[in-house]
Amino acid sequence: MKKEINKIVLSIILGALISLVQDIVIHGLPLHFHENILGEILFSACYVYCFFWMTRFLMRGFFAKTIRGENGKTEVLFNFIKAELIGLVMLFLIGILLTVIIKGTFDIKLKELSEFRFIMVYYFFINAILFSVEVGLRVYRLYSHEKDAKHQAEQSFMQAQLQMLRQQLNPHFLFNNLNIIAATINANPKLAHDFTKSMADFYRKVLETERSGWITLKEELKTVRSYLYMLSVRFEDKINYEISIPEDIQMNYLVPDFILQPIIENIIKHNHCSKQEPLRIFIGLNDTMRLVISNNHNPKNVEAESLGIGWFNIQSRYKYLGAETPVKYILGKTFFVEISMIKQS
Image 1 (cartoon, rainbow, N blue to C red):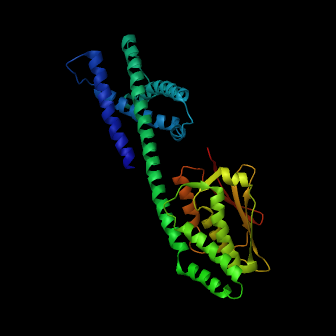
Image 2: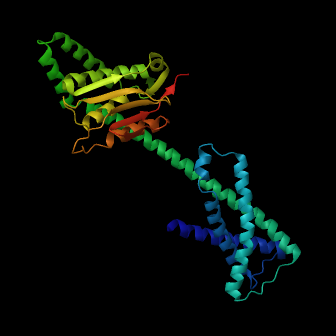
Image 3: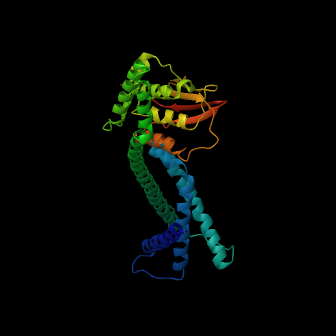
């Protein structure tokens, strides 16, 4: 509401300025406040207000495309021509409508040819100025919005990183792993050794906070294998996992650092698993060269409060890195997450 009031006030000011300049050019100085001057100011103010609305309607959806570089100079020129033509039609319609409302008659007198020609040329340039101002302001707002959104994404990313570290280093997670080592060190020394190695590799990765960009898929899969191995030992036969990705793809494609672990964590957190119905996790590729993480969908009856936090953090990281955001969906009884990769140059 406040924006519309401001636009009305601006239209009145611009309308008065347009009318006064027009009167000076036609009749010369000194300025004479004749009986029609208020009507002309009202006409110009209504025209300016309607032109702003017309430009906004005409350019709807155009600004967002322009800021992404999807529209060229030809389309800008085409929209300008449309604005000029519609503006000139509005010029006649608003004049007729105000004459009927104010004078209460359809007896409309046309201006002299020279004055009419001047008004047409004059409003052509007025339209060009108003069009440029409206488009310029809207594009500026869009760029400002994009800048603010990027800053917010960066903040979300940093918060996600901090939260991720806190979650992975919480005592419950650590003590479960230490208990497994204590329980197996005598009964199964090899298992205890392999588990300790996986745990050390995983925690080393967690503590590498200086890197937060893209890494090779091979390196990311090494981390997630350590994590999945620890889970498979902890849950025994309740969790099965398979990773099927060609070696050359692992070496030549990049993913965001530490992106798979929170996806796996959410799968574990929100699904039942038992020896009778084990949780099966698969990591592979689809036909469009996107990384796919899937599992048999067996949701818990009571969802955890943090259901959306992990996914929000994943999306924030992709937005921060300027990449296509992941998607998730359910097909039949299988839950899928697809994430984009980039090829190394």
